[in-house]
Length: 310
Image (cartoon, rainbow, N blue to C red; front, side, top):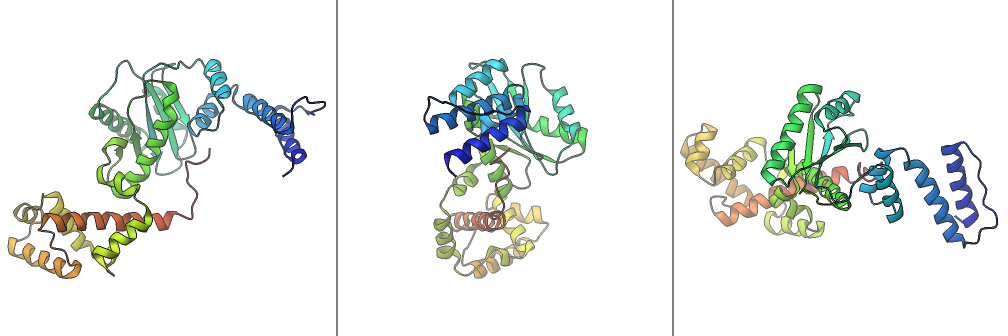
C-alpha cells in the first residue's frame, strides 16, 4: 500500500471516529512522519475518554511512550504504585453481571477492571504492601469462588508477582496470559494458576516442539499416550500422586496390592518403562505431559490466539 492509500485510510478512520472530514496539505514532514503523526492523532482521540481501550492497548504493547504518558495523565494513573494483575478467563462469553460483581469487590478509584474480549477480564488491584505467592493464590482463589457463586459461571484465573510500577504491567499481563495457556494444557482440573508455580509444565511449554517429538520417539517409540485407556492412566497418575508408593496407591484405588503389582507389570510391558523406578517414572511423567501438550497444541494451532488482539 502506497503513501497516498495509507493516508486516505487513516483519514477515513478519523472521520468515522470524529464525524469530521480531515485533509493533509502542505506538510513539512516527510511521508513516514506524516503517517506517524496522523496515527498518533487517531490513537489519542480513540483513547482520550476510554481507559479500558488505553489499558488494553498498553498491555499488548500497541502504544508509543508519548501515548502512554498522555494516557497516564488523562486517567490519573500513578507510575510508582504497588499493584497486582489477575487475568480472568471465562468458560463462556460473560454478561454485564460479571463486571457488576467485580466492581463491588474492588476498591473504588484504586482498582481497575479491563474488559479485554468476550472471555477475558484483567483486574488490577492496588496494594498497600507486597504479597507472597501464597497470599496472591489465596486472593485469586477467593476472586474465582466469589464470581462463580454470584454468577453461576465457571472461571479460571492467573496471576504473577506484584508490580512496583505501572510500566511493569504489560510483562505481568503476558506472564498471566502464558500461565492460563500452560495451566489449561497441563493442569486442566485446576482453576488458579500462578506464573511462578507452574513447575514442570512451564518448563515443557517452552521446549521447542521438535525436541518434544524427539523425546517421545526416543522413549516411547510408536506408542501414543492416547492409546492408553482411562483406567491405565488413572493408575499411573495415582501412583505418581502417591509418591511411587504401592501401598498408598492400592489404598487410594481400593485395589489389592498384588492386583496393583500385576497392573504395573502390564504397564511396563506396554510402555517399556518400570514406573516403580524413579528414573522411569520421571521419563513416563514427562512423556505423558508432552503427549497432552503436543496433541492440544495441534488441535488449537489453526485458531488465532484469543489474547493477541482486542
